[in-house]
Image (cartoon, rainbow over all chains, first blue to last red; front, side):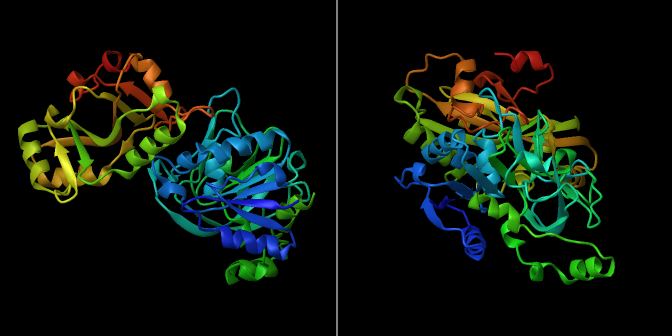
Length: 245
Length: 176
C-alpha cells in the first residue's frame, strides 16, 4: 500500500514532499482534493505545505471542511499515519484531529513576537522532541535529538487548551529549549513547533521537514558551528520512515 | 468611533464561505448571501466630524478605487443578520493610529483596532441568532461554520440598529 499526498488548490510543497518520499523509497500517489478516490486503499497520508484556498478566512479552514477531510478523519480512527506539514498542519488542526468532544481546542494562529504580529517569516531553526515514544513519527529519535529545520510561515503559532502529549519544540543549536524569541520565532505556546494527537498517529508540524532531509542544504553557518563545537545534528529521515511501518 | 470598509469587488473570503455552504450544507442551512466588512474602532478624545473628514480624504482606511467606506447604515441591508468576529486579544493597528494622529495633531487617538463584521442573508430565517452562530459562524470539527475560532475569537450578534454603536457595555450587544 502507498502513501497519499493530498493536494488542495494552493498547495505548493507537494513536489518537495514527493522528493522526500522518493529519496526514502516510499511509494506514494498524489490525490487531488476533489478526487473520488477511496482513501481506504492508502496506508498513510501527507498533507503538504502551501496556501490552500489562499488562506481565506483562516489558514486551512476551508480545506478542513471538505469531504476528503471527513474521509481522512475516518481513516485516522483506524490508526493510519497522517502527517500535516505547514499548511497541511493547519488543515489538520482546523479539522479537529487534535481536539476532543467536537470542540476546537487548538489553533495555529498568526506569528507574534512581543505581542506584535510579525507577518511571514522564513529562516532556519532547530527542534527537539518531547515524549518521543508516544508517536511513531518521533519514535526513532530521542528527547535530546537536535533537528535543524527550515521555518517558513505567516501563521505558525500553536495555541491550545490542553497541552499535547508529544511533539517537537523549538530549541537552540545546542539543544537548549526556550519558549521566547528568538529561539521560538513565532510566539508559539510552550515553544511548540509540532504536535501529535492523543493516539499518536496524527502529527502536525509547522516547519518543513521535507526540506531538511539533506544536511548539505543546511546553511553553511549551521554546519560550520556544529562542526566546530562537535554538535551532532540529525535530519528528518526517521520521521518519514514511520510510513514504512 | 466605528467605521466599516468593504471591497468593491467580490470578497473572496465571503465567496469561499458561500461556496462551502452551497456545496456541503443541508438545504435549510444555506445562506443566500454572505458579506464581509472590516470594522475599525477608533478610541481616544476625538471630535468625530473632524476625524470623519480626515478618514474620507485620506487612504488610511480605504482606497476609493478598491473599497467602499461606510460611515452610516445606508449600505447595510436591514434584512441581513450581522455578526462581529473580534479577536480576544484585540488586533491593534499601530501604524493607522500613528497616521491618523499625524493628520489630526489636535486630537488624542488612543487606539485603532480591527475586527470583522459578517452579514448573512437567509430566505426563511426561523432560527435565533445563537443558532445562526453555531450554523454559520463558530467553527467546530463537525460543522461547516468557518468564520470564527472559539479559542481566539469572540462572536457577537449586532442588530442592524446597533451597527455603529460603541461596545461600551458588552452586555448590550454581546448577549443574544
